[in-house]
Image (cartoon, rainbow, N blue to C red; front, side, top):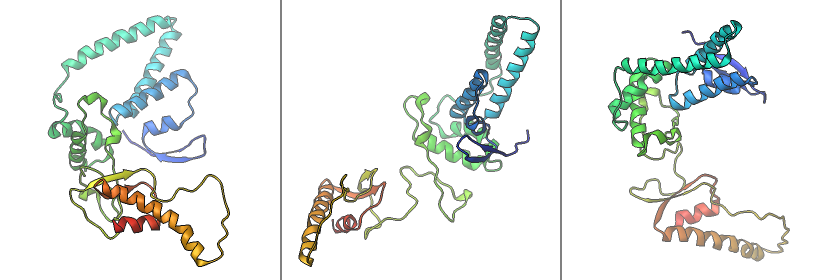
Length: 261
């Protein structure tokens, strides 16, 4: 099958250039109830397998076309539905006889690699052996006790500037694509504190005006903020924390006390 990229413009005016069927149908404003079911089926296929969304849309559309022909011949919709249900049951009987192999252990990297290789080869032809191995290793590391509850957000991909695809590797933990701030650049077996927000003084909800007449008043004004940040960082250090990961900016005064402790 020949895949061509399509230009999709959604209702917000955002442009998408993609050959992924799920992206196309999810960005379209579909109004017809039957068509919406096909969109939902494509989305479910994407979440379950990550591939073959184009087949789901094509197959679903063909089922609707065949059903329309039967309806035009005067066959009742309930009979058409019953026929499809019988065909579905028969399909599962035939599928079981056509099974070539199965994956009994979803925590085995070799078996997982065989499972994901087909989907990856459809997206990155020529790199499927290397990428499927990396994906299998990452999935095996975060596989929950109940495999059906696997969350795809547990595996993330980040790009390192200046690298290439052949240099890809799996990181068992957290990868932050930037250097460390502060005088300490390396810690081993350290206790880590992770904050979603930045480490800085929080502004008040209302605005106020402070009149400073001399340098001493300026020093006294900043002492309160300095003492509060000093106490905060010292409390972190007293807990045995040696590395702080911040999801936002770190103020200069916070950086000073982090370097101090």
